[in-house]
View 1 (cartoon, rainbow, N blue to C red):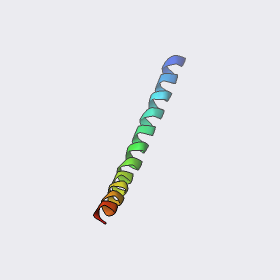
View 2: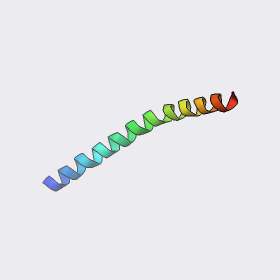
View 3: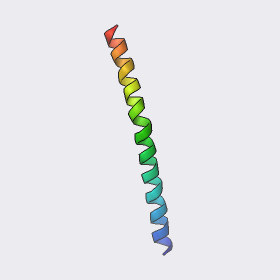
View 4: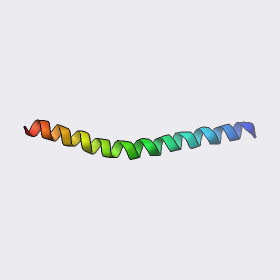
Length: 42
């Protein structure tokens, strides 16, 4: 039982980190692409 609980906690943490990383990475990607376009455009 303890092992299952630890597995669940680890899985939930990785799932949470993955969701947060995705939400943070999407807007950051647009910002980075925007800056690259601005620099290359100039």
